[in-house]
Image 1 (cartoon, rainbow, N blue to C red):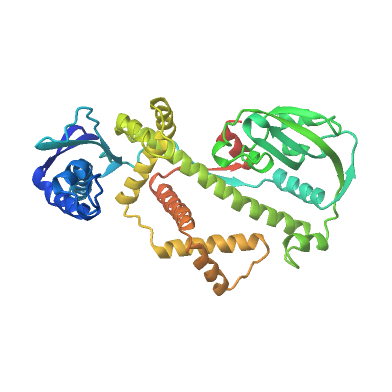
Image 2: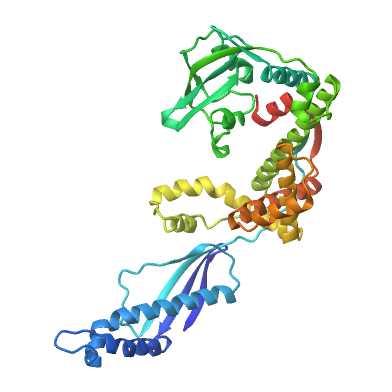
Length: 440
């Protein structure tokens, strides 16, 4: 068998395979012999059919099956031996006039190659690493929310800026139907006006765009998935089912113990310090996520390389349970191109910086995540044995291993980007951070 590659451009090639009789005739003959005792042809006893009749009835199908096996195996081995770094999988070129009886059979496969490129993590940029602080306004607001949450509910006939509303967000067209309780002041200042002066039974129609200062709150109150939360702009109805004010809870030791455990907070000053600590830890995670997204956007914009776009669009039509039309594949490619580009940049960054993920890395990350989750439910001092047992169970699930591995990679890349990209550090309040993140 003769196999060669024909270059079209830097990221597109064709693999040409010439198959001759010697490549498959032995296996075809073996299959014919195996078929003879089982062959059934009218007028002959089973197992007594002449070989030429067996070949006539079954030979063509057997020949095609064996040639396909030979070609598939040869193609796989060739890709491995040539160390080809492919995007997608090889696509056979369709020849409507293909002659299976020819002395020499030619098979052609289109392939898309991973582009060759370099990235400059230290390139000049205007990326900002935000240090988000919890200011007095935010802390005092959280103290008020705590008092309200643990206070006594007082039914109201008409809603005001301090009311809690129980009701259902709904939009049949967008698959939204979620009953929740929400404070009027949880909405953005602009949206709050639409929820005051209302009575039980009223239906408030609002746009999801600008409904909250932080779009992530759509996930909590409307149960919108994270992927679709940013920039979502659809109309939803909120049907009011109950309106309550509240009699604030007293800030005493009983409340502090209920919130944080016995004796851990003993005064208003300590409560504010705890709120500040917890809030800034949460803000740090959000700031890191924004930094990662900003670096991704910068690298995608400033790392130029070609992709085998037309090949990938054709390949997208062949994968998945539901086959895509050419138009659907075009849309899917446009949707996924940015992610594919960063996936390639991410791999290059890891290779250039010799970043590797070990099983010990995965165990340590999982252990930390589990301890953090347990702390949220009041288990602040789990034993090493308890945590290790949970880690072992989690890592026995391949889907969890994949998900956690992606998080470990993201964490390592974030550390790399912080070091190499050398972003400008800027201290801001949470309101300023939200404005920088969403342009509000």
